[in-house]
Length: 552
Ligand SMILES: [Fe+2]
Ligand SMILES: [Fe+2]
Image (cartoon, rainbow, N blue to C red; front, side, top):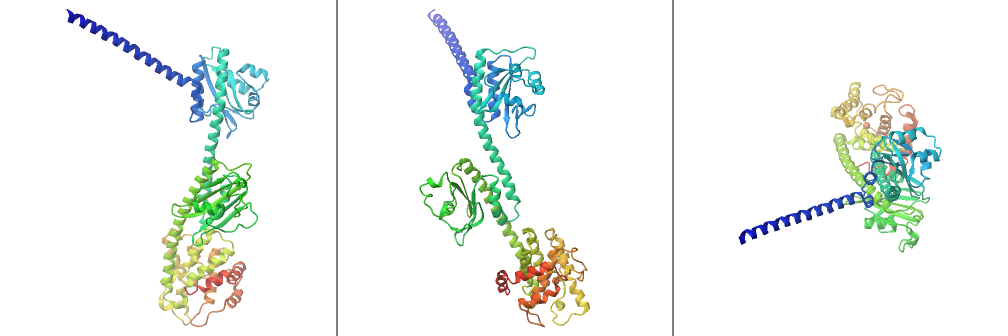
């Protein structure tokens, strides 16, 4: 009996415990739900945003939760497109930011009835009126203004188009609180997005960097390319020379006097090179160390200095300054840090490419040396013709790309002689007509040798036509304009080298004698311009340095 009583008591106790536990659970669940609801719909939720879109969505959720029967649309200012539109419903409607409607709205405060707003300002804009009232079913409008600038406006519409919507005073007050909170957060979001857009602008800098054809073009245009990203009064781009430990200025802007080279560790740029880290100072005059520093005194006010290089090698430093009234900030530092990484990687790639290209060119050079080794009188001829051709072309302001092709063309101009018998090549006495005709074939043989490789597409014609003349008396009877000017330059350099080299039947002519001898060919064999450039080059210090290496 006692046992049965105890069992009943136990089971009742269990049932009570279970009920209590269920009640406890449901209370906990209720609290959880409330916590979630409050979290979702508290005004504080408007402070937790990652993007403007998330912010706007929070506003819409908040208002629709608090105003029964309302549909909500938020129109934000898109400064890039000069219009207001719903960022979460891209492209449905947009209102130009120079419309009278927007002008009046930015002067309005509070929660206003939409029909009242149109009549108060006597706005005669049926398109906007019809869109907001008839299509959206708009009843109230809440402008979000920051410093007289309309950041956004909230359109409160009736969820059911057939029903009216009247806001209570407390709902209006609540909407004003939303507007205030939205104002702060939208402004912060717009600042963050502006910075993101600025980073996006860096892509144009990267494109400009990649469009530069050579390494020196990259250095020469670095300040110009960076000026699209950064406002500065003065700027210097230095390249680092490891042998001398000097930073050598490659380009300068806003500084009249010629900027001198600076030793690593000296001045702002030298220190930045030594430390290999960005330095940014808001006002040099107020800085305890830089104010007294004598070097690079042309950098006044605020300055920022950035090194660029690979992990193993420093390539250079760029330093900018501008008025201390608008100092460089952290955003410029980030931007330049990203830019310098791109500069360094582009330079590393170009250096690697140039190294590969140099080794390619050296193979070509070895090939011509092997050919010339058969004849002591022509040894080094192709290398010299290359130097002279480039000397002439530089004075004619050839682009880097044309110089590049000319270098290969000149080096290979006689490669076709590989297919001519040694007996004819090395013959020191006068050639017979038949032998002369055979040797003339070296231009065509050279052309065919180079036909197998698309790399030589441009230069094949330089090789084929390097024995043409202006007046059409060359191997193929081509006249000026019918063959590349590069072939004409190679021809002038070829004749000049032949005259200034020893031959079995005569000694080498002096430079001046060779030039005066060639004068008679000007306007017949090659243009006057090419002859003048050859004379300027042959009489320059560049040439005298190069002629000393003639025997190499
Ligand atoms: Fe030739
Ligand atoms: Fe030649």
